[in-house]
Length: 290
Image (cartoon, rainbow, N blue to C red; front, side):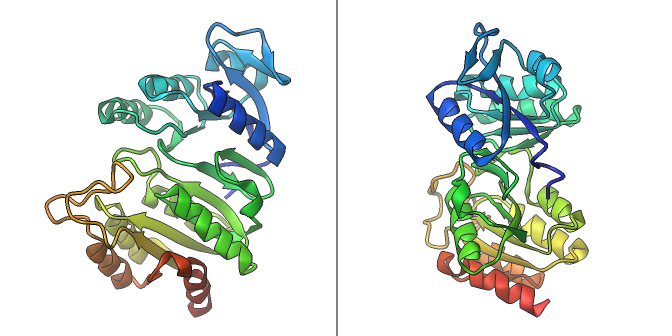
């Protein structure tokens, strides 16, 4: 799905603290064009050959950036997202965890009137193996191929990718959509992109307890998807009312349980892995059955 991220993508890093510097270097080593960074008050300087600008708009004007990756701490992350959208950047990836929900409501409203797509927040980012990665995922476990991976869990994204690679099954594009209640790109948004992408032949979708995004995805897949899909739902053993890692992973009022999500997915003809150890083989089985 290089329509979102490819070797031609030009990336600006927002938030050049220790985390931002570490992952800027890692993305650049993977081969991504990390052409600019933004740190207010430091415009005109550089870090390890990467020019620094005071604003995203300056980076767009001077470097032609079309992707932003955000490591700004939670209090300023919402403003950073909106600054990138206001500068006209088509793809914004926000890694930051802990952005207040009230801030994300404002961001969501702002993005609705822009032409920008947000991945995250609270996510590992996006990678098109062999071309570019934007985020914190370990690039070496990925292998170019034709399977799309979309997940609410960063760690389970890596687990699915590793299993697929071990099975000799490469990936087209892998997206960690984030585990917060309010995110930019959801399951249905990503599935629609994979469905139209000629480079993707199958998709593995990893959800978790809380909310109803997986049920909505199951209904959409049943009506629209023309490629095989496998799935996994994390959190089967989580006690009701307890937050399990992600802000969005909480069962409320008996809704959002693993059981009802699995029932919806299987009802849509989707093969569901019984455990994280079987993510890869379940996807392979779905492809063979298609």
